[in-house]
Length: 493
Ligand code: MLC
Ligand code: AMP
Image (cartoon, rainbow, N blue to C red):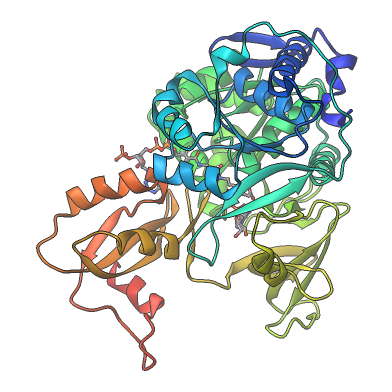
């Protein structure tokens, strides 16, 4: 049995999940996920790593489907609930998903597509019907467990395949480092198609026997209402969320602020990650909550690798020190290890590092050195034993709202528009979002940015679409004809 499921036996009557439909014990979660597994297995003894894509809202349904897929021996492929069909079908086709599960809100987006492609179509409603129990397969740790999509320096997102052993390593490292226990109670407001929400919040909490309260969609006011109830003691978010909470806090009366301050002061732990935490946000948050945020660094391919200490000095502007079990080195462009104090690319080894990019053997080989180090593409320096991120080696990777976004992916979509001759996409600094996605376009005729924006939102999720368009006659290029992205960025200043 996977270690993640042990709490269901150790603490069956403890509340595991709270969502808008109610409160569920570990026993409930176990029984509901067994039912999903039995349903998926009908007529089979093991899904044998078949990919099961699911579009389900955060909460008990999401978790019981995820656990059910694992119990039946499948690979879980969570679909982003704000994706339009072209982004969803890319993931479903790229993973060659055999089964698609949809919650009631998402049936309308996926049903016709699944029928047309003859993919086994299951609704949550169906999965909730009684089914005769059978036996569940033995799941070994080396099996594939999950595929999450991440954008990179190729135009199309890549599926990151992690095994159960990878997930166990990612989770157990954090449980130990941040002292998770069954006394904890956390709020999950992050999307559940990325590691931050899935691993750091949901899986760590459930593994430790803690309670997860799901809030969806994110709403700063509701977050504070929940804080005031006094049960939540562990909170994790991306810098944009802290920024939004600070704005909400500042809009409150003095007595409300005092009340909120008192409730937050009682938290055990508050963590920020997925993007650089501006020192200004950290300082404001400390004033309003009494907490010096713990900043940490990770990536879909490696889970969390570097973290400020739970006990000990947390440094603003630094991502901290290596987590236990993680090996890292900084290297120059020739992959030569650098001595301390010199900036270089972070490369990582260890049991939490993913298995492969799904169906992309060449990309997998390219992302590792010949001696097995994973190349993160992040440039850092070590100062007094603490890592500090300096930037990325690719200008085409943008981090906005904690989401990793590929400029090349957006350019590819923009170029499909009949009125666009050429374009260049960059990320420009933004206090709230970290970076804002912006696009320069060379139109073929009269183009209205309002309708272009609407068209883009039908092709890709809102969080990837450009926030600003600049119409140019030509793009800044170097002598070789290559677009100079840093010059392009200056045009948006
Ligand atoms: C959305 N909007 C944006 C935007 N995203 N504007 C600028 N830049 C962006 N990136 C716009 C929307 O289009 C919308 O405008 C308005 O903002 C509100 O959108 P929303 O989607 O409703 O936003 P909100 O709910 O406020 O969400 C903000 C957020 C969300 C911060 C909660 O972005 C989020 O959940 N981010 C977390 C991502 C995450 O989990 N990353 C971890 C990856 S794993 P309009 O015009 O449509 O009304 C990883 C590894 C690691 O990185 O280390 O953790
Ligand atoms: P993703 O591919 O979505 O998993 O995003 C991983 C990337 O997020 C890393 O490669 C970093 O560039 C960035 N990242 C994560 N945590 C931090 C942090 N604390 N500071 C700066 N960048 C971060």
